[in-house]
Length: 235
Image 1 (cartoon, one colour):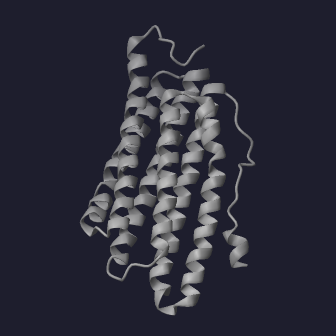
Image 2 (cartoon, rainbow, N blue to C red):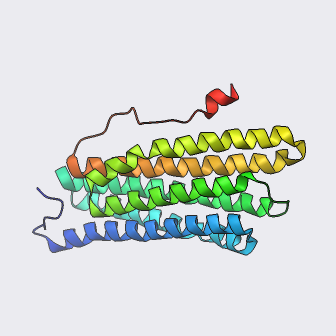
Image 3 (cartoon, rainbow, N blue to C red):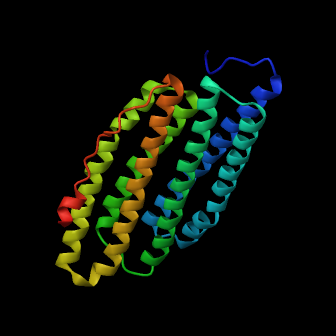
C-alpha cells in the first residue's frame, strides 16, 4: 500500500494530514530559529538572540499537538502497517525537532554571554559549522515531508562531514585557550555551542533514518558513519 493512498473514511486522511502539517510548521520554525541564532552569533545581535530564546515555546507547542494527535489516532483508528509507521515516525520526528529547538535556544543563551566579551577567532569557524548543519537539517526535514528515502540516505552520510568540521573546531578552540588563558571562559562557551550544533546534526540524521524507515519499512544499521574524534583528543 502506498503512503499516499486514501482511506475509505475521509476524516482519517484528514487526521493524518494534520500530523504532516504540524511537522511542517515545526520544521519551518526550527529552520528559521537556527538561521536566526547563527546570525545573532555572527553579528553579535543580542536582541535577535533573545527573540530566538522566546520563540522556543512555539516548537514545544507543536510537539504537544503532535503527541495529542497521535494518541487520538492510536485510540480511535488503530492504524496498522504503513499508517502505523507514519504515526509513530511523526512522534519521533517531532521529538527530534523539539530537541533541535532546545539546542538552538541554548546556543542563543550562550550568545548573549559571548556578546558581553570581546570576539574571538574560532567564532568564524563555529558559524561555518552552523551553516553546514543548517543545510543538513533543512534537507533532512524536506526529505521526510517528501517521503524521499534516497535523499535521506545522502543526508545520513553527511554526518561524517559535520563530525570532521566539529573535531577540527574543537582542536582550534583548545589551541586558542592554551595560547591565551584570558579566553578560557569565552572559549568554553564556544565549545558548548559547537556541541549543541553537532547534536543538531545528529538529530537531522535521526530524522533521515526515520524517513528511510517510514518509506521502506526497513531500519538502517546501528553503525552510523561517525568521525567525531574529540573524545580521543581530550584523552
